[in-house]
Image 1 (cartoon, rainbow, N blue to C red):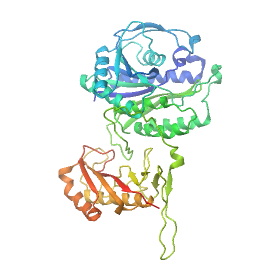
Image 2: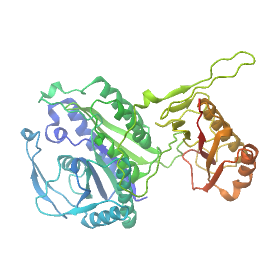
Image 3: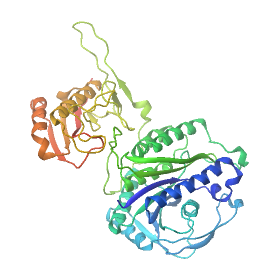
Image 4: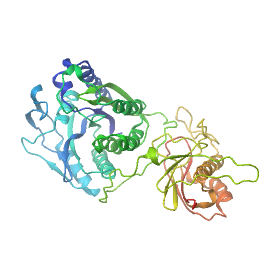
Length: 469
């Protein structure tokens, strides 16, 4: 693999310039050192940095000055002192990254002139992770207006360039978790996380990082964004970008090397190494954008907690109809008798007269057991399985979700089915499908894919009519 590691680091200069002034800042400095050793062990040859502290407005800028040398002073914390630097930048990669971004519909350009102001976050990351210029480096800006789609496409462009030259690359994102700095200067001993709610969200993010759940961090950002008082997507763009470069899934070995308050924000040093083990039940299901087409609908929508409904039946006596809830337009639905989503997504969402279901597999609620057996064992070796039993379980799970939303299997209008082995499994899957769907007459597309996030052979994505009353 060309992408060998991901790293999350804070860019505020205190761990670099005055780690002795506060115990937490010292822990962060030690965390940087631990992450540096992890990078050495990963075999990385290049660091690619995405810094939220280098904002751009028109397109995306990529550093391409081969050997930038300067003395940096942070514009806010200049009292801490100056930071002389001399970096080794991979200019050829910078040009290749720019071209790859343009090929995917993005505006991008390189910057290469003496004295260009490299941002504090990139300087801190390179000084602490790469003090001897062991690795070459590349730095890309964070466009202040870019939404999730544009940010993901930028990440995929980076991966295109990495795969093209084959240089082993570690991707570094410069960010804090909670992102609210104090607005007045404080004594080092007074540093703390800005609010209890910020601390709560930071703890959840760290839990996901420790579990290697990168895509779940990206998903969780939607919920956090709706609840934090400071409406800024800068906190979460790095996660969207990092997932696009490394792979939008949860199968990583995560390590939280340090976490501490950093002038009111949550500073964390985290490494993510692609795992060679099975991903287990850490599913994900999200739109996968390949080409940027100019639509910046940043996050939008209402608070998911306010819109979500936990659907359940209303008790009915003999001969009475069972009353089902009717989700409002835009509402999300989670069925208590279907396997729980393991990422930050609902079972279904109503939009207008339609219900859109997230991808549904055969897992059983509560146990996550797979009817018909998993497709591989705990060591990752292929084993025999029954795709007919898996297909029956998928359809049963879909039925439960639709009924929880007040709809039914008869209301399905479109099905997209995914098979990991078309030649082996199509006939058996098709026979089970026909038993349930021949009379329904839904349109259907069946796709062969190389793998699904969990060790299953089949998954459906469904669109159905929503209840009218």
